[in-house]
Length: 272
Image (cartoon, rainbow, N blue to C red):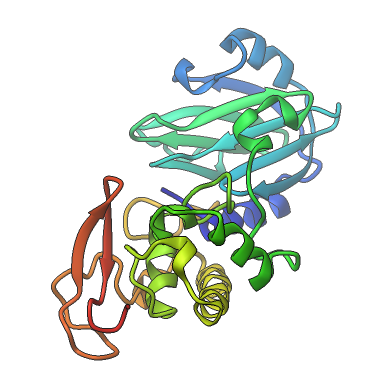
């Protein structure tokens, strides 16, 4: 699933390309992607709209339109958003496309078809968006605020990091990597971390996310940016999907376990 860095990279790419572009046509190929309106109503309301801005909240992409409404897209597991020439061959998993006024299209592809698309007048209409926790790269996300989040949680720390209602945008990849960098075992109870461990985890979260954005995201699976290009942070991953390999820090074998049904990787020697 694209996480905060991947969605941030897509947002930056689309913002430059979509501002002031007008939608001249809407083609809905998979009706199940449209969640809060019937496909015909969605298409009618989007036709003629102009993109004013593109922003991100957690893993959501938010497109501000010229009439004050918002197009909201969550890519879920396998969703992709690309900006491409209208004459470019369509992907077989194409679900939705917006035909623009400059000979280009905004295309939404989704192999597993879990992605969701909304058109709303107010952002608060989407409960999962309204209930998101703080953004981990914002200045108000401090070590102290992370400590406040963790101390009220008896769950395993990895589960807490991935809870979107507590912290927005962190998923399996970056929770795994941040815990490794901070030398914290993912099975530790969140409320049992020391003050020093919380500070180290806070630094690790922000460092990992920022470095991934700089590397244009992680393409371990099917993630692509707005131009259809792969990211490069997969080459910097220390433990994610490296079960059985030696730890780059101490040489011990990296363990692979399941936490809440998600594959989790850690060094049993380094991470305490």
